[in-house]
Length: 54
Image 1 (cartoon, helix red, strand yellow):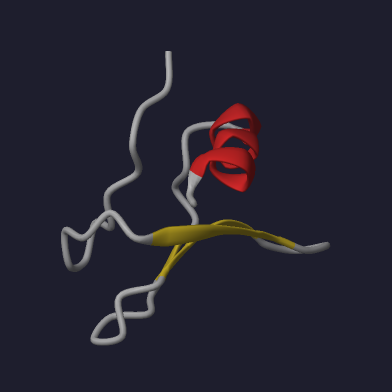
Image 2 (cartoon, helix red, strand yellow):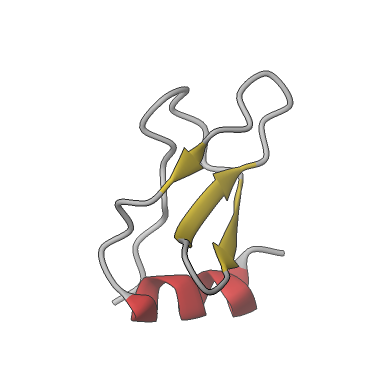
């Protein structure tokens, strides 16, 4: 089941998955926040956001 990500810093649900060789998680797209959440539950959650955040 799909669960919506919520930023642990500002509470908004606008985010973009991010992954590189050292980091993976969600980047908050709230212009007043913009923080990175590396505590995403699993790779499946990131994959869901890649296809469903539009």
